[in-house]
Image (tube, rainbow, N blue to C red; front, side, top):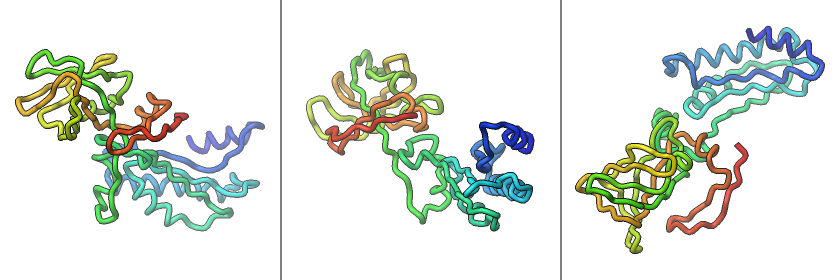
Length: 234
């Protein structure tokens, strides 16, 4: 299949083959052994193409992989790349390092395997305000599917900032159980101290869909003061 694509590129006047790229994040039953083996197949493909002269005329060969769950494996295997006929640009595509998250990549990050090398911290927090408190077990805030990434996990209630300006506190007893178009459904236990007007800060899962939803992202200090904006082109 890869050779057929390369042949088609070679036969097109408007295209050229710049290298080999792949994504190891969807390797079935992924574990370190399987992912390393898959990445070595990717490198072997680049070696075979180079020997066949498919990169003739280039200044460098692009070799690219590396989602945010296995960039340690990519670094291991790309360090083993043999000498090719041209310099090799090793391109690592691990977008979640920019923002990380409180769900999907918190569970999958390579730093869980090599904690001695440090950690990544989530950069996104979605603030919404309690607009209804119909019962001791239920609350609603004013952020929903239009605002929050929800394709892999619902938002995670983390902190509460009281409407009266009191100190921020953990969102104990507060759980996001669903999202409507513009509202979040919160289940609250007896431990939850939540009133209309309070602000709930939620962690998000899967940064990609957060970038997709927010074309202008506020940059906030710890006290909530917005100091800048980031324009996204996702």
